[in-house]
Image 1 (cartoon, rainbow, N blue to C red):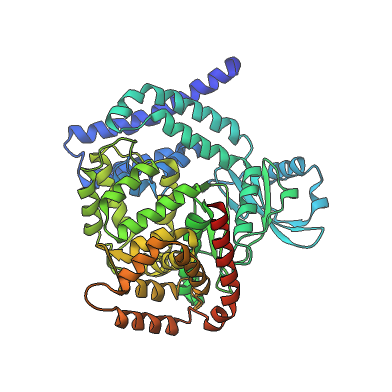
Image 2: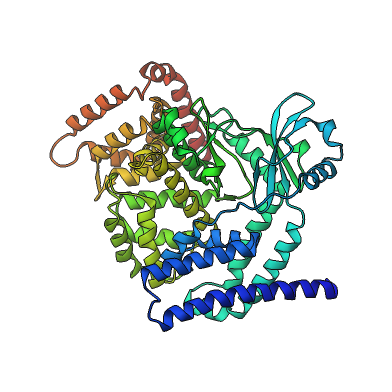
Length: 542
């Protein structure tokens, strides 16, 4: 505030204006020479933009990383180049870092740690990490310290961003179908969350709780008593970063490691509704025992329970090739404004789905679908909400890591079994399961068999227990007349009984070990009591 603050904002604005004029002047030159769409010239200009953002500092680096996942704003060739933006910057002095730690914890450094690395192990635009050992119990920990002075600089840049966005709001609304200031607000909110290390500690606690007891995923233990707004302390992870692909491949069991990574990402998205929004190779470790470990929880995002269900609906509608319902899902998720006429979008979605050959495991990848979707956002009034831009970024990043470890990696070979298991075992998804099992109004026995076979290997283990699902189904069938009718129709479809289909299904169940017959027999009395209790309750309330 005051004259000094105004001077700093003005000086920063002039620096931004100089860099922007250099880049925009280059674009104008390309256009005047007829090279605007020349692939080589475009690549060079995109590289120029990436270098410019890197020079301008943390806020611009983060903005570039966000734009790298916004096909509704940035063309694909620029997106690819911005995806290379790195957060690495020279470290600040350790004596400054140690002073911040002492002030944050309210104790001398040697009272808390018996040893601490003299130099940072890693450094980024917002902070840097030290390796230390706790004096109290000897635990090895990672201590992340915020870069001094970064917060006021970010607030200054965000203020300038928002002021400039206000000047182009009308144009962005007409040409891009989005509010420029709203985009800046969303970006600023996520950036300031990354800057709040108290919030990051809470994020680690949430992830630690979600994956507690998981045999395939390691989340570092948080130390909230040794954390604060500028310092966060967590368990030290001994493992191999995914940037070292050769070392991970030499460790063996690459297929299992990839499976654990994909399934853990899907669980974050579809079960917990809290997912790591920046799972780049530097934030993921392969442990010697085959587990996958995550670090750096500053950038996470949440998805509501209703939106999780809509995402699963979208998967179901995609499998069933129901493009009308898929377009409706876009409205529910906020990609399209309420009241938008989705009929013109339905054939476009069908074209994307079929052009990407997503029905075949051999050809599907997110990069292909994203490339096709990029074309769609310029033809229709589609805006990608910030949380789903983060979902896309997360999935693309994880797919890229998997492809670097295994070039012939097929996402759906891992994802389908997990989704199949969820559909078969989660009672909340029963309606979605029935939607998948009915094709063109007829019960598809092959789909049910395929779901069971896929679910059998959903997490690298051969364990699939459908006993509880069977128990729930018996209770539902007792009271749901419509469902009973549907199953009877499925068994008596046409002019014959579906005995061969049932026999084949029983063979699949027996081979998969998915149903514990002894357990079902033992639970008949308790299930009967539950049914009688429910029946008597319904009689009394009616």
